[in-house]
Image (cartoon, rainbow, N blue to C red):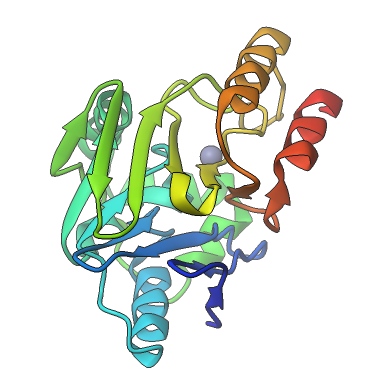
Length: 226
Ligand SMILES: [Zn+2]
């Protein structure tokens, strides 16, 4: 796995369509480091951590989830450090955790070839919940760089967390700009609310889960056209 040094304090691990792996973000402060999203599986996470170690970067002190979906969260039981999610995301994960069984794992793999492929090596499918749960907004001073986590409207899920890094004008937003899985329907009202939010935020680069980083204008145009 090749990491990209996006800006002074931000590294990005690449997305992959085949196994539906999202971009994993990494923000390095002088005191603490934070990952954005845990990853699709323990194998995905392991490859990310190996790439960090190769780049001589400390493993994350914090891992924040952008939303509960499996490809962003199922590596949670294996993370280093403290996990963070908003209340809604944590609640969704608690539900999935309750339902998880070998049968449920098989159903998920039958639902999406990308899940079957990710779990093909016989990896265990487990669901973790958050160590730190926030409602509304939360700010973390990583040392010389700040992460602002907050819930916001999105046409993708009801539990979207946005991660703003004001010093570098970067917004990490998971799949928030997409429609609803699996038919990708976009609710125009939610899309409008999200565009209003984006317009009010001080960022220049948007990092979505399954796409190359975009400018703020490109992201807004993408939502308007979907
Ligand atoms: Zn998603």
